[in-house]
Image (cartoon, rainbow over the protein chains, first blue to last red):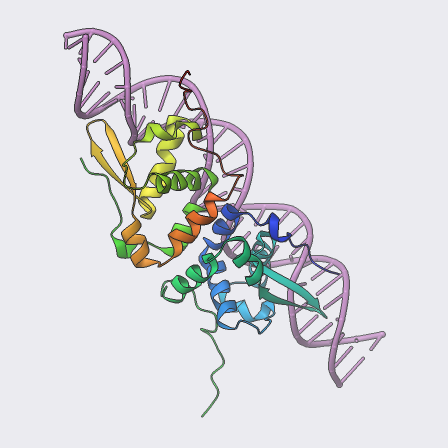
Length: 118
Length: 118
DNA sequence: TCCTTAGTTCAAAGGTTATTGAACAATTGG
DNA sequence: CCAATTGTTCAATAACCTTTGAACTAAGGA
């Protein structure tokens, strides 16, 4: 019940760049980076699209080697593959995330958050 | 007789990443970086594809703000927009180029070079 | 002027991508 | 067992991407 991931040396630079070159996926990565260490499940990202669409984008990120997904119950806990990416492409992830943080045009995760009544 | 370029603040991160996520274009950028300071014309890249195809990819790079093209006679002198990219996305171009240099799967410019007879 | 060189534009083909809704599977809780 | 929760798979669609050859423009040299 484990999902397919590329090994570190199967991660391809053009593929990683292409996968990050989509606003929805870049927003996912930015959010993962902002919560680094906390594994997130797919439902956290429903702000960014339908369930089906999220499944599609998360599979792209995983298949490119950008994220790792661990199956736990009915959930998939998703984390950034920071170690592998840093080893393969030093500095790349950091500069992409730093630039993404400043990108106001990217869709935001948590934009439709339930407001706690005061 | 000048070609359209985005201004520095019109350069979009997802768009730059998407444009760099193509092996042909990444090979172009890698070669431009290896000859930085030397403006190159399109014919230098004919190893990577047909004239028509190169025109297409070079337009993509220019329209994304990755390169600048200056019209000189019948040539277009192409350079990396390093200052604008560094200002907008610090460290990104350097890490992409460093990773691209190590990427043996990328097509090589100059692979069909005319050998000087000994 | 005529020819060559350097690139672009166009239309077409074939492939890939993003998005959707409906149907499905699998785990968890009552 | 039944129902709710999580997420995947499928088929369809519309849009976009890459590549091609033929035709074109524009500048430079003989």
